[in-house]
Amino acid sequence: MKYRGTINDLHLLCDKIFTSHLSNHQQCRTITKVRLKWVKNRSLDNIIDIHTDLKAACLLKDAIIHRPSATQFLTAKSIADTQKLLGITVPTLRFIRRYPTLFEEFPHPKYRSLPCFRLTNIALNLHNIERKIYETHESDIVERLCRVLMMTRDKQIPLQSLHPLRWDLGFPYDYDKTLIQNHPDKFRIVKGSNGVSSLKLEKWIDEFAVSELQKSNEIKEAKASNNDGDHDHYRRYMRGQTSLTFPLSFPRGYGAQKKVKSWMDEFQKLPYISPYEDSTSIDPESELMEKRIVGVLHELLSLTVYKKTKRNYLRNLTDELNMPFRFTRIFTRYPGIFYLSLKCKTTSVALKEGYKRGKLVYACPIAKHRGKFHHVMRTGLIYRKKGLEMLSDLDKFVAVADDDDVIGTNEKDSDDEEIESSGEWVEDEDEDEELDDVSDQD
Image (cartoon, rainbow, N blue to C red):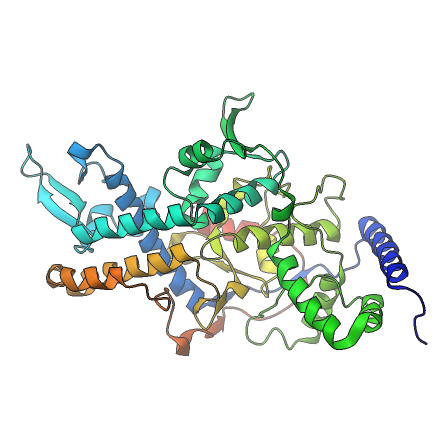
C-alpha cells in the first residue's frame, strides 16, 4: 500500500508519531536492563598512557612559561608534591628528567645543590607555535566553550569544575581571562550565592545548538533521501529505523550475540533528545532519560581534542548537566559507544568512534601540534643527552607542518581487544562500586 499525500502532510504525521512515542517512553520501561562485562582495549589504553605523560609535560611547560620573566624556572622542591596533580605514576623530579629536549636542568643561582629546570629553545619554539594556533583558531575555541555552557542547566559552570577540562577541550592556559576579554558579548564571570566563581554564557547561539550526532546523521539522511526518496523514508520511520542512531563498535564477540543486537536495536529506536534541549520534564528513571544522558556524554566527549577525558572531570558536572552522580553504569552498559579505561591509576572514558586503527579519526590543529610536542619528548626519552645534540634537526621538524604526525598506535595492535571476563548477561546492577574501588584516587 502506497502512502498518498503531500510532503507537508508526511512531516506532520511523523511529528505526531514522534510525540506519541515520546509520551509512551516517559511512562514505561521496556528495554531489558542488562549490562556487559568490562573489556580491555589495549590500543586505547596505550593512547591514554601516552597522553597522560604528554599532558603532564604540557602542564609543566605552562607552569614555567607563566612564571615572572626573571624566574622562569621550577625548582626540584617546588615540584616535589605535584605527582598526583599531574596524574603521573612516577615522582615529578624523575619524570621531568626523562625529557632533556624540553626541560634543561641547571643549579639554582643561590643554592647550588638545588636542581632547577627551564625550557629549552625548542620547547619555547613549540610554545610560540601553540600560541599562534590558539590565536588563529580562536573562533573554534569560542564555539566549543559556548556549546559546553549551552548543555548546562543554568548556562554556567563553576570555574573550579571547568579548569580540569581545559587541556582536554583544547583551551589556552588563560582562557578564562582572554576569551572573556575578547568576547564580552558571549561570556562573563559571575559569583554564586556560595561565593564560587562561574563562567556564564551571555547569549544563546542557535547555530551552535546542533550536536555532533545530529550533524553526522544529517549527512547520512541526505544521502539516503537521494537514494530512496521521501516515501521510503516514511516507511523506514514507521519501522522505527530513522531515529538518530549512535555509531557502534562492540568488543570482539559481543556484536554477534542476538541478545546484544536486540537490546541495542530497542535502544536506538528511542527518540533522541538533543543535549542542548531542556530535560527537566523528563522522568529521571525512564529509558528516555538514559538515552539523553548517553547523548550528553557523547556530545561532551565529541567536543574534546582526543574524544576522551577522566571520569571525575565529568562527575564534577553532574548537577550542571542534569545527570545522576553515579553515572559510570552508562559507560559499562554501552561498550559499543564508550570505552572505560583503568589505565594510569585513574578512570578515563573514551568515545570509541573517535578512533580508527589506533589513531584519531579527526585531528584538530592543536592535536597535530601536540603530536610534534610528543615527538620531541620521545627524542629526549630515547636518546637522553644525545637528544640535546639533535635540537637543530628537531627545530626543522617543528617548523614543518606534517598532517600525519598524530599520536597513535601500531595498526597491527589497534583493534586488539581482550575480554577480561566472560560475556555473560546479568541483571542491571550498580557497578560503580567495583570501579570506585579501583579509581578513588582520580
